[in-house]
Image (cartoon, rainbow, N blue to C red):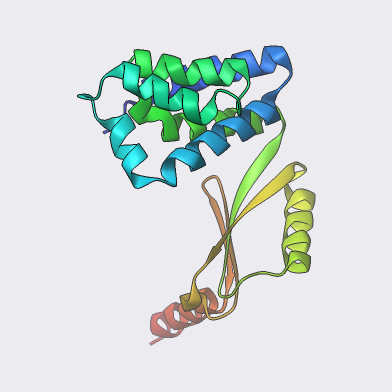
Length: 180
């Protein structure tokens, strides 16, 4: 089980550095790229998560993979995670950093689920409508679920808007059963 307090502590630390440097987006992109690079190799995940692997070896691998690719602060942040034996928290730290960065920049993340892949035009229309409703900039995280049949389900935080065919059928079913 992840220690959420530690995740928040480390994410806030790199967030504050990024904010001081005026590089919220850049650091977020670098953290995301490092995470994707590590997660793209299953053996790397096991390697960095294994407490029996010498931290020196982990640092050498980070140096080979990322020293020239990342800014000094982000690279040293990864080394710090190795030193403190917290690298297993890295994916969650990246997610928390993104949440902090989005909040600071006034951006909401909307999980948008459709039955089939949404076209760029549809994505823009959804984003524009959500921005109009919320008054904030909205980034879409797209998902597909064929069981929706058609339409769209949007989730922003704890708010859920179900405009799917499956959702409407379920609502109709409940109303019909209630009138029996």
